[in-house]
Structures are given as structure tokens and as C-alpha cells.
Image 1 (tube, rainbow, N blue to C red):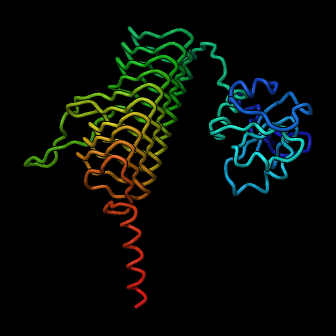
Image 2: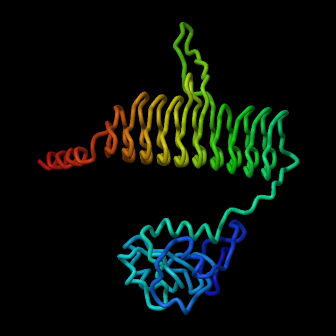
Image 3: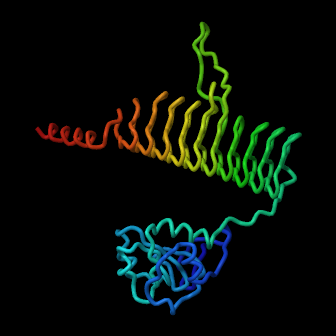
Length: 348
């Protein structure tokens, strides 16, 4: 069974899994989005939730942000649609157009209005283990079989999932969410950090010396420092530093299955997409995007607002604002010019 409206269409926000609030009047939607209202707003004033264009009815809010879905916009039965000014005239009669500059951002705010995070009750499961000297803030929820090590500090309003392990003396700011089976050691976390299930933070970095009898592991004596508002995806790993700290800047988003090596420094609001890897001691400056399966060699510097393409192999520094792709990495235009040349040669 899925969440359904009266017509039987599948809708987002199944009440078994997602906390729900509302209904809300049109004025509240305008308040959170800053939208300019166009169309007849007398037909519908209260809204019960959000839904896609093709499934929404008069009680739902939907959004449009891709011209590919223009036919769906023109036929939608939604009561209101969040839309950019370029397509406001395509909203059908009887549907309210909430005209904004950034439709997806406004949609996020409306969806969060109807589906906020549940209010915490500060429940702590009796099977959880809390070490001596650990400091637990106000209204912290701790799931079954979670372990919080000796001397750890957990800020107000945090959530620690089932089977998560927070190591000794780890510090965590207010409002953090630690998913099930996450492990955190040798780390200092800011506020509102989210670690999704299975993430590994603070384990030994990949460092070894070659001795006469084989490999000898080098002590990893640094920490992991994670800034405010960082999110780390499921089963991603961030190694602690060897001699200096591994640092993840505030607001950065790390996708699932990403590897960040020891001593790496990521700036503010970077994006690292699934299966990408950043090798040890590489510095990634602010607002850099690293696409899926890209690999960055160690000891590099990636400049501010650079963009690294999917499956890119980066072996040298990248200038600020540059767009690179390929392996070895090269500027976009050069890469596609090379591809075009190879195609011409293959036809001869």
C-alpha cells in the first residue's frame, strides 16, 4: 500500500514514514517562498500537501522547473504550482501560479513546511551504552544498541541512530543527526551535521612505510574536523589526518560511497558526488563540484568554484573556476575537440 489521494493516485509523503503538518493557507506558502501570486486565488485557499504535476489535485502544491515537463504543467490539476516567470503563462486556468526566481529552492521550502523533521522527545533506548564522563545535551535521542564513548560530548537536540558508535572524546555540536551503524572517532563535529547510515569518520588513513620485512603502518595522529551543516552520505568514509587534520568545510555535501583521504582539506559548500575519491593532502577550495567517480591524486590544489567532470582523473592542480573532464583531466573544450579529432581520424 502507498499513500493515495481520493482518485487512487500514488502521492509522496507516506504517513508511515514521513511526519506531516498542515493544511496551510495560500498566505503561508507565499510567506515561505516570497512568491508573486498570479491567477485566480479564490478557488483554493487551503493546501494539504505537495505532489508531482501529473498526480496533484486542487488541494496540492506542485512545481515546474524543467521545460521537458511542459505538457504536464499545461494539464496539471494542482491547486498551485511554483514556477519561474518565463513559464507563468503556461499555468492552466484555475491553478494558482506562485512565481519565483528559483522554483526548486521555493519547492524545497514548501515541502519542508509540510514535512518538517519530527519534534524530538529526548528518548534514550535502555540498550544504549553511555561511557563514563560523556556529556549528553538536552533532548538528545539515542537509539537501540548505540554506543557513546567515554568523555564524548553530544550537543543539544542530536539524534544518534541504532548501533551507531561515537568514540571516546568525540565532540558534536547541536542538532546533529547520526544514522544507524555510523562510526565516529577522533573527530570534532560542528552543528547540524548529518551522517547517513554506515558512514565512517575518523578511522586510520592509508599510510604506511616500506621496511625490510614489508609494510609498516604509520601512526595517524590527526583528527577529522567537520564544519556546520555538512552532510555525509551513506557508506562514505573520511580518514583522519596523519600529522594535520582532515577538514570538511561548512555546508559541504558529500554523496554516498565517497572516500576522503587523510589530511585532505575541503572548503565551504563543496559538492562531492557518489563514488568519487579525494586522495590524501589534496586541498579543495570553496564551492568546488566533484562529479561521480572522479578521482583526485594526492597533494593537489583545486581552485575555488572549479568543476571536475564525471570519471575525471585529476593528476595536477586545477585553476579556480576551471571546468575539466577526462583522464588525464583537461579543459572541457580541449577534451571534446580531441574526441572530434579522433572520430574524424577513425573515418579515414
